Structures are given as structure tokens and as C-alpha cells.
Length: 369
Image (cartoon, rainbow, N blue to C red; front, side, top):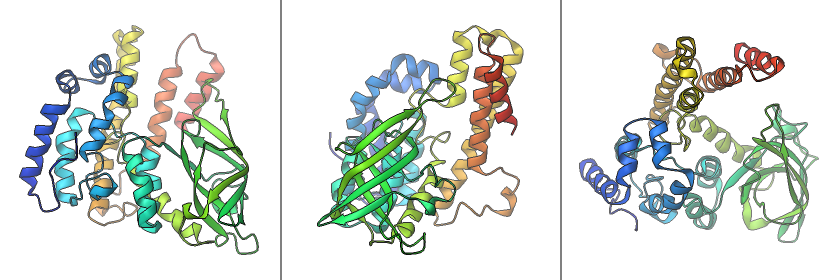
């Protein structure tokens, strides 16, 4: 399967027709049928392994990121056609994999990278052949990111990296990382930082999981001791990394328009959908109180999804999502809504008689904070 024959000048109706034809030919009929029902039905017919195996078909079509140029893995279409394509694909629950690559890394490459860098990194990102993580936060530089202490020292045509990063999602799976490191400690803290693309599979990179109170390890800490980055993998000018990082940090706001609004949802369904599945599997769905709580969470996710749609529409129109229209002032910011919804779901899941009271109390407190 190759890229669809959709060009920048293709009319919207023709583009939609081509996508529908592709769906009929390439998306398994069982998936199409299950997607029209619910996450549980979808999970029963499409396992994560099945989806991973099929994903190259999606990537090679150009539909993962249709607004990107064809040489970068997209179709080169404008926002109007892209929105029409998204409306056709959304009901199929075709999750776009590698979100940090598609959003954060790509944002920096488009804004400040060279064309050689874009040609090298963007196609493997689209195909999910090279997974990405983000090495920004440090033990002493979280909310005050500009205080980061990780050092990058020039050594010929490369840079030697030393330091520690923390709270890194997917570091244990990543092939590459976007990295901020201090290259000139004599300059003011916002000015002596440079932006790099780091190969995670090399000596000098150690990833350690951070175990949470649940026993899971969603985050990692990364120790860098003599890791090297070729200068051709530096994005932007030396000591200009803070400005480059603004594009990445902005893309994190855009990522909220994925989960819950059709583009970047999880393979197993949204958090609330998975909670519904759990309630049914454990026999708790028969309890009307449980059903009421779960459906309130589901409603919160739907409202968040609609808010995310507005954010995505604003971004496509070249507007800032940080300044909502007056009529939308009563809407809670998406990042806050997502956090509160996640903790609500955590609380609901932890309210099991078999779990220690301290865990239930902690989750309940975080939910109400």
C-alpha cells in the first residue's frame, strides 16, 4: 500500500471518497463493525498486537498526518481537507501511535529543524519505527524548567551529555529523545540551553523505572553519563534551546485535542470506556451507584472531548487555544479537566474493598484537590 492519490489541490469531496475507498479496502470489516459499538467490542476483535501489525498500512497511506508533506509521511493537504478526513476516520478508532514523536519532536523539527533533519526523522516517526520520549524535567528543574543542570559539552563534531532527567514517559521504550541541556552555564539560565535529538540506545544512557504507589511504573528517570549527540542532531542554534522548546511546549497543549476527541486515543478505549469494561467484568455494573459514578466520568470525558475539538479548531485556524472566546469562559481548561478526570477515574478504580484504606483515601483526596 502506498500513499493515497490525494494532493493539495484535491477537492474535499474527492478526498473523502478516496479515504472511504481506502477504508473499505484496508480496514478489516470486523474492526469497522466493532468500532460502531463500544471499546469492549473493539478490544475483543482488535488486540494491541493486531493493531501494531496492521499499523504500517495506516502509516503508508499518508492518513496519520495528512497535513504533512508527502516526503515527510503525509499527503500535503490543507486544514479543510484534513478536517474532512478526520471526520471520516474518527468513528473507526484508529489510534495514532508515537504521540511524542508526532507532536513534540515534530513541532520542533518543523519550526527550527533543517530539511535534512525532517527527512531523517519524520517518516520513521509516522511509521512508528522510531519511538520518542522527552527529556526535559529534572529533580531540580520541574516547574522552573530553565534551571536545568544537565550539561552538554562540545567535543569536535558531537556533544557529550551528562546529567539526570526525571518523570519521563516511555523512556523505557523510546529510540530517540528530545533533550534540553545547558551548553553555557555563564549565560542567564534561559539563554544557555540547547535543544538536541538524543539516541537512547547508546552507552551512557540508563533508564530506571519510577514505581508508583499502585506498583506500576508509568514514569522513568534517565541518567546520562557521557552519552553523545552529533552536532547534526542539534535543533536550532547553540544556546537557543529555550526558544526552540517553546514549539514543543506549545504542542503539548495541542496533544490534549487527541485523547477523547478522536485522534490520539488509547488502543483499549478512553479511560472511562475502560472503566466501564472493568465494572462489567467485575460484576460491579449491576450496582446503580457504581453505574451513576462511572457514567458521570464518561460524561466528563465527552465534555472534555468537545472542548478539545474547539482547541483543535482554533489551532487549525491559526488562533491561540490559550485564549478561549468569551462564550467559553466557563469551560475548565483542558489540562485541568484532564487531570481531574484522571484522578476521578483513579478514585473510582481504587474504591475496591480489597485495597488498603490509605490508597483509597489518597486517591479520593487527589480527586477532590
